[in-house]
Structure formats: structure tokens, C-alpha cells
View (cartoon, helix red, strand yellow):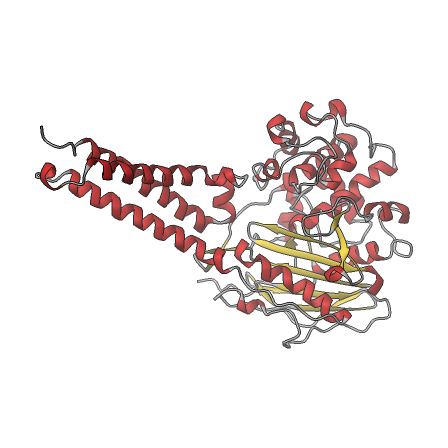
Length: 472
């Protein structure tokens, strides 16, 4: 059985051009060890910088390959920051207008939306509009445009500019606008006009780059056990979540964002300031800029630019403190919603310790870890009741010993309601069965079993009620 050796890469990247390499020691004040996240072997890998060049302080292997600062990972929604840079380039060059309605260049439901509103997630597109279209392995030419042209009125629940609601759908549209303005695939444009000028030589956004870099799809938790995810690269998702990068390359990006006046990059300093200007307020108390969240450390410290990212098998976090010339990059080849609080805490605690703030412990979500087991237990209960009802239904002395008709009907209604809840539950949370099976397969399997078990129970109990009439 192939040993899973790398579940995390933590890169604490100090941006000071005269800085001493930052070494995050294994101590109680530091971010919690990833070894506590899962029962599988896990390590934390630390990377520091001196003179802007990351130096590996610890390393490991992933799929039998040595891991260091140049190991590629999928960076999830940190990709949105790169999309914002590409868009602002085209705004600078006059190919896109930041505050004019998009009109006929997008589906009618989005005609009144502006580029700025897409960048800020205030277009009115719902979170579900992105969830139900994201993460589809479709690398055909025009795949991104096909996703965008499928948006209609049902994907919009607010007027443009009225409210903030995070949705990858916004960055799907932005990627499509880049393609239309340049007549190039989004990934190819990003590599040539954004990643290359930043010197991000081990990063990419196309299927060819994914093959060349041999990026790992990561791992998921299935009933508490680590399971390798075998999945192709999603080139149509580069604009919202499938850019490939490394700790070293993300350090270069962070250096540029922190010091655009003194670091060469794909935008001038004024455009970078526009990019990082706080926009609408988010539910966490931060503000969303363009592909980045802006806030202060713990609500009172220095200004922080940051973004998390996740794909079904990976996690990433970029935290930049410009005033401290400090950034932290967290890259992990595992993801589950139950692990999200602890994964997110790693980067924040590294920054807290660096600037002298107390760290804040965070663990796995006990409820989410238990969820697939609880749902599976509910499925077992449904099968037990179905078996009980079937046994009574087929007994020869049914009329003498069967449950009363009213009791059978009540139980049948309860079983039918549980079945309906199982069928509809994903949609109530804004996603479908495909997304559930991709992001939380254990919950999906348990939910399917529960729906089937209680549906069978409902049928058996209805049959029992029909045959349980008292004799005349």
C-alpha cells in the first residue's frame, strides 16, 4: 500500500530583503502539527526566506517525490487573486471597463453587472451558481464559456451591487471575459502575462502545465481515513480555483503585492493599490478587495491581505502582512470540511507568533467528523425498521398480530419525511449530489444509504398499513 507521507507544507515566508531565515520551531506556541489532523502519517514542512529566496528547513515526500519549496500544489481560490491581476491588466490597457455594465458580452441575467462587482462578489450571483458548476473536469476548448453562458435568472438572487455573497461563479465570468478580450484560453494568458513576469516558473494554469509539473490531486477523508484522490486537472477552473503553484512562487507573488513600487510585476503600483483597496464587508468582518480579503490581524493588529483556497483534495492559504514585510503560505495535499478550522489556523498562528500576538488553538470540527457516522447510523435504523415491517407484512397471521393501521401510517409518514429530507438536503444547502460526493464522499454514501433505507421503510410500512385493517 502506497505510503501517504505529505499531508501539509507550511511555508513561513519573511519578505524582508535583509531578513534572517524564519524557522518555525516545533513548540507549543507554534501552529498545531498536522500530525494531529488525521490518523495517517503526516508532517509539517517549514520554509523560511533570506534575501527573498526560500530555503527549506524541513522536507518530505509526496507520492515518492521529495517535497520542498518548489513542489507544486493546487492552490484553490487563491487563484482568484491571479485572475484579478489579469483582469486589471486588461483594464489598464483599455480592453475591459471596470465600472460599465457588461451588456451583450454575457448572458442576459448578468447584463447590468460590472467587472468591479464580479471582482468584489457583489454581482448578485449566488454561491450555489458557482458550486454546481465548479470542479468539472472538462478541458475542451470553450468549456469555460459554456459554463458562463449557462447562467440565467435562477442563478441570481440580488441586484448588482446590492450585497456581497462569495461565489466562484463571479470568477468564472471574469475568466471568460479575459478569454473574449484576448482571444486566448484563460490559462495560457495567465501563464504568459501574469505568472511569467513574476518569475513564477514552477506555476501553471493549463492541462499541459499540470502534466509537466505532475501536480498531485491530493487526499480526502472518508470515514476518518485518508484516501488518495485520483482526478484529472480542471483547466476550465483556472480562473476560480485551479492555478498550480509552489511555496517559492507564492512568495514571489506576495513580495510583489507587498512592495509593488520596488518589485517588478505585471501591474503598476497604482493598479496594485486599486487591486488591494477594501471593498464590501464580508461575514467574517474583513473586506473583500479584488481576489483578496483585507482586514486587520485579530481585528486590531496590522493590515492583512489573505485568501484561503481548497479543491476536493488540497488546501492552501496565503497571508500577507505588508507593514511587517511578512507572509505565510500554507499548502496541504489533503482537505475535508472537518479539517478546515485547523488547517486555516496554521497560517494565522504563524503570523500571530511572528508579530508577537498570542496564538489561538483550533481543532477539527467534531460534529463534521462525526457526521458521516451519524448519518450511517440513521441508515442502519432505517434498514432495521424496513426489515421489521417486511417481516410482519409477510407473516401468515398478519391480521392477528400486525401493528395498528394508524401506527403504521404514522411511521410511514415519518419514514417518507426522512427520505424526502435526504433527497432534498443538498439543494437546501445550495449544492447537489455531485458536489456532495466530490467534496464529502463519506457523507454522500451515508446519505444515499439513509435515503434508500428510509424509502424502503416507508413502502413497507404503507403496505403494512393497507393490510392492517380490523376485521368486519
